[in-house]
Length: 137
Length: 137
DNA sequence: CTAATCCCAACCTTTCTTGTTGGGATTGCT
DNA sequence: AGCAATCCCAACAAGAAAGGTTGGGATTAG
Image 1 (cartoon, rainbow over the protein chains, first blue to last red):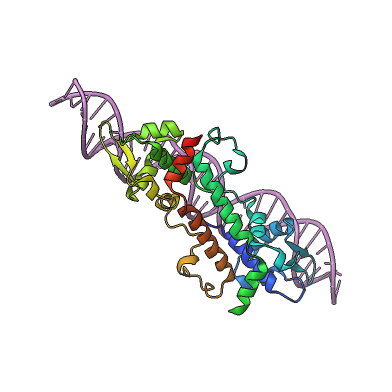
Image 2: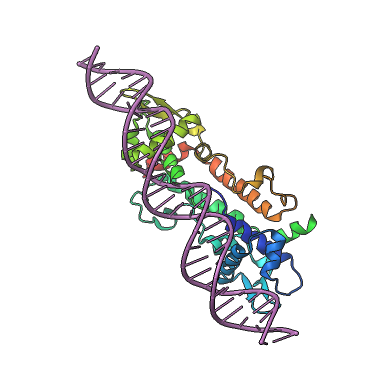
């Protein structure tokens, strides 16, 4: 159970954008260089974040990416969900997922609780929190 | 971020063993059939659980597997760790892991907290709890 | 018109997951 | 002794997923 690079990169990029106070769009190349993330790969990650409504992109010269909402209103959970889809550890947790053992499956309870714990932890942290922590160091 | 089949199977098998009150070893074939898990695959999972000290195997006729400790003293976390190694979402969380950005990396805080949430959730559930839930239905 | 920039589809390589196969070692029963 | 049930283990293989690259197109400020 590992976090994908996509997620890690995505959160890093979002925190980076959250620390950018200028109000100017930040070009991909700058984010990539500053965070040490392969540019073409980051581009696809940002595309997903844009489709998820988390960042706003501006094309052309002086274009780039900005947060679409205030950093305090974006949780890490939002970022992860935009990149990985609904966070659910096993397919059967939301609806049974076609598993005929779902009813009475005790281990399913485990994953459900785990899902809740993860959701809780991730939705309780905003980009603002992280940007503030980053600023201290 | 998905739970591997290994883990899911492992937990299911352990809960199954926990519901077995006879004190007799349970053969692989029975666990496999009852839980609908491919036998050869389950065998390797049980081998890991045995190496982790969670189950005890008896060879020969009338042999099989049993829990090595009382069900109340085995947490789901124990099972997952035996199967997947120390549960840590990103390599850098425990010790920095060679990432030169670790100092001052704000996103690392996220994964650390997430690790804690997951550990907490999983170590708070024992096989006894799950076996009891399973018995109700 | 041009350079900077985002957009996107297709591809590639490596690793992980999920198994399977085939043979060996123990052990209880007759 | 011999046999059948059972665990033990290493090696292999197909498919999926992760991580990343390439190449070309569309927009836009200057």
